[in-house]
Length: 251
Image 1 (cartoon, rainbow, N blue to C red):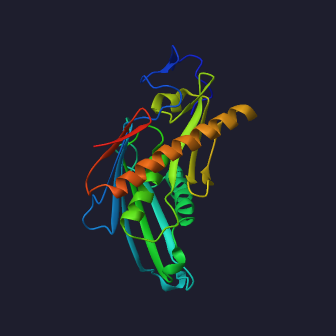
Image 2 (image 1 turned 90 degrees about the horizontal axis):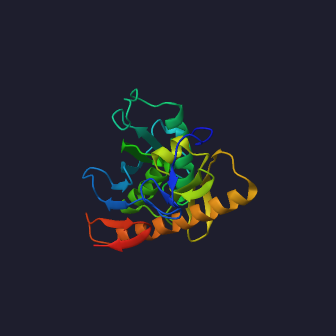
């Protein structure tokens, strides 16, 4: 996220570079049960993002001194593949990956009924195969689907979406150019049934009124994503459910 986009035109005639309106999501497709050896898995295409998630466990936690007799531990590993970005990324975790892994684990732990699996660990692996802004939202959304696909008891799903400020305009679901040259990015994740926020980060600056508008647009985006998650889980195995321009539709 740069400090501003004064030299880059991102909005023309009330339309963004990809033709979307200010309140429209990128195209999204979701699928579950994509990995044979995982307890649960999910794949998501969100704009040009491509993310796959595998869930393993609950299984006994080692070393044993880390075990908690009252609940399971949920670990999340977010990884940006070296080939996922234009300039090849150095393999292995970096500071950003560690930070996103931590916030995702905390968000997912708020809905998973960890108390049902004492002394165990649930491992969630989020692999970004292709990145185009908003990967933490896409990864968290897919991770929630994968946990549900694994049959792990959850209070609700976690749905995520971002909003931000581009060329002085508040928009939802920033793409790469908007994220790089926009003025603010506000990723958010919620527990829809409780309207509880489990992730809220901000990179950039917003006025109080702009924040309120961005917050509402992000929540509305989360609710659209939530409906897609439910449709995906209710649909037949390996069937894509898509959204175009923020309007749900199924095959």
